[in-house]
Image (tube, rainbow, N blue to C red; front, top):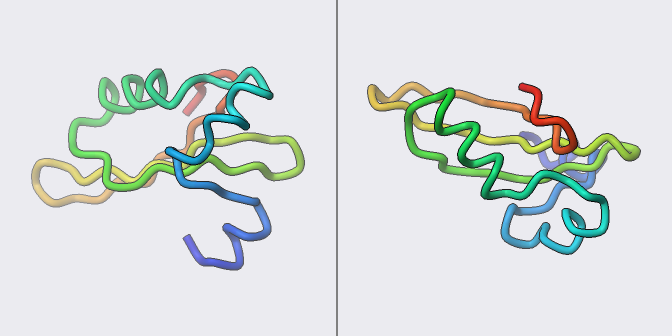
Length: 81
């Protein structure tokens, strides 16, 4: 994701997002990790939590078993892909 887009959406690395997750009643990183792993096989290589005017999303990059890269966006409140 471009730095300008991250800044506009106010994104944080997954590990730094715990206070925001707790304060806003969002799905935990662990829950989203499990959802992504069950839907898309591969290794999660990056995960960030973004806040775009109160719309929280997890943006996850998954490296597939054959080297394919998948960009996944998950609603942090509902878990919808």
